[in-house]
Image (cartoon, rainbow, N blue to C red; front, side, top):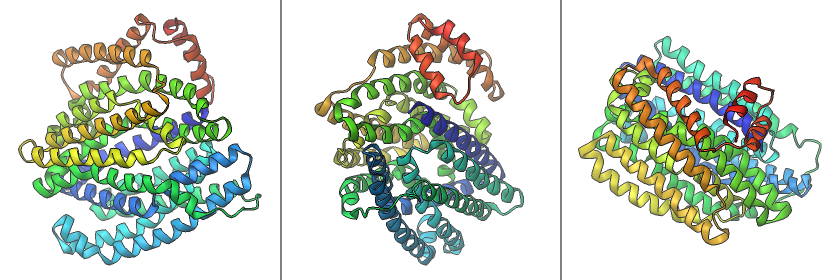
Length: 496
């Protein structure tokens, strides 16, 4: 798991950095803030089609490919991958047709201008590779071929965002961004499609029932649809009540808050197939130690990143997107703090997924979307982007608490509460010091200084609290694909 999580972390880090650079250029090169709101709306439509088209089957493919690999039944694993990919092809082309034909209606509904239907038609072309990549990636995750996936994803991401930025410089505006997406996503489809095929090409497929995949994915599908609307309802309400300009202000806050998610995202992507394989071999008891270990490192690593982002929200968002987006800083701080307190959700949710308890996510999504929608409608009008951020923070909290309480009733919460508490204390002290520094030395270009101060304070707190053990240093070595001499020094300083 360690090495796989490292490759996924590297992939996520490079991908997010490329996305940050792309977003920074888009925020500055698009003629108005409203145009950035249009790009956000198009991205939301793309995600909507992918959510419906995938039927939540890529997650089922990952689980059962990994599970049957754990049982040394590669023939059934290949049958699982074939069954899933066939459905993906059908739903991808159906989604293309719907989006292409409904382009004028969607342009009028979302953008208030039916003459922009060509943007939706370009988006329709991009939906095909995005859907199919979900399935090929699900197979690769199940096989745990993270190294080659990392290189493929990084290359295609650079093509995707690099092409979009190049065409922005050429003056093509939103259409140029969409063309860049299309090129990069088809490159990703070609690479992941090849990897998912070649890994099992020497194995004869044993036909696998689509119904079995559907039985696993159906609760996740309903949950995924509800999760999509609950996680985007704030932006839809902002678009409907306040317009594309306010959505353009709010979008950088949501995007910046998601950057720190590469830590939990990489761990989740590596942890899920590992837990599924362990469950297939040894049963539920084997998951407890893995859950406790994973929760320890999520706490120690993610918590300070999210808290640090919250306290540096203003310099981050102005450096990231420009001065005209500075009013989105409070929204960024609220979302980042909510993600810090709920960081263990990435671990607990994967345990539930691995043991097949997927229906709880449907329940959690119903509760979350109800609370989120109500708060959005009440708060976006008077508070604008900050109101949307408060509703999103509530969504994050509810989406964490409901599955966590459910898992507690099934097998208990096997998490490292000591590491969580010590990380919270260290992060709080770090935040206080950084806030004082910001008062005396103000400026967005001082962000690297704030990061250096905050990182130093947090490491000192880890040492004072005796939060890091020698075994943690040894595990970090397993994460790294090469030896780092600085790690020995850090180990001597931090480990107790």
